[in-house]
Length: 323
Image: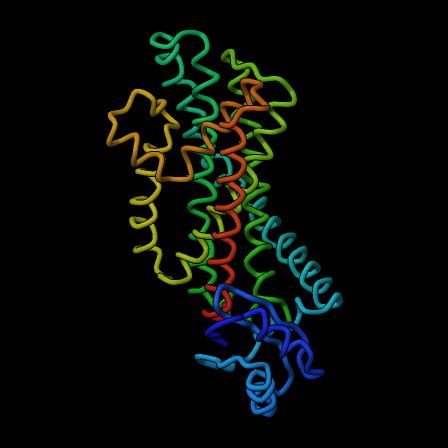
């Protein structure tokens, strides 16, 4: 409901009605939860008129199944159970493909082994403190960022259609897969850090814990967007080149391979418009033990905001596509 004038007065007038369950304000919009909205529409407009408020427009929308489930404690418990079931199923499938897991981490490890020593020559022994966080960003982009491949095949071979007719929540169908990608990324990251230690990388335990925690919302963001993107395309021959076209520039602009402090002003400005630069710099600050720095705070804030936005987009895509 769009309101002209005092929206708080409109909220108070509608809240007094027994048929209204919930009213919340979003800018100039009132979102009202009622039963049988088409039947009490006249009562709503009469209450607004009595309160001296004129609505600009009124629109009725029916709740999705996910809205109904999440509105009650029992529904929320059911969603959590569904997330766990999808997560456990996807993790078993992923662990069964050990070859894919190994090859997924080979490229970042090769970067450490073949490119890292060159940086040591130019930057010095502290180059590993710069390069290892960058390799973790590369791993996240290549692992969670390409997670959508799996759902393209699931859609093609009818797996999603069979899951759709089950009582499982659409949110669970997304988050169960996303959390699987998070676990896989954390395992691969542990291997990269171990290899980095062999080459001379050092990090305080608290910094390592903070850095690993920072990878979680990053993985959630990339995986959720990758699934949403793949669901829209549903063709792996289109998804692969389009995803690569996004991932490679984001990797370079993040400063993962080389710090962006040496970049020209125009390139530095473009880099600051991407969320990945702040996450990389936050990782470097955490690994360096700068726990109270603004760089780390910015990395955490951007990573969390990016995760919320990405999960929102992913969830809406799953609901709208009935996946």
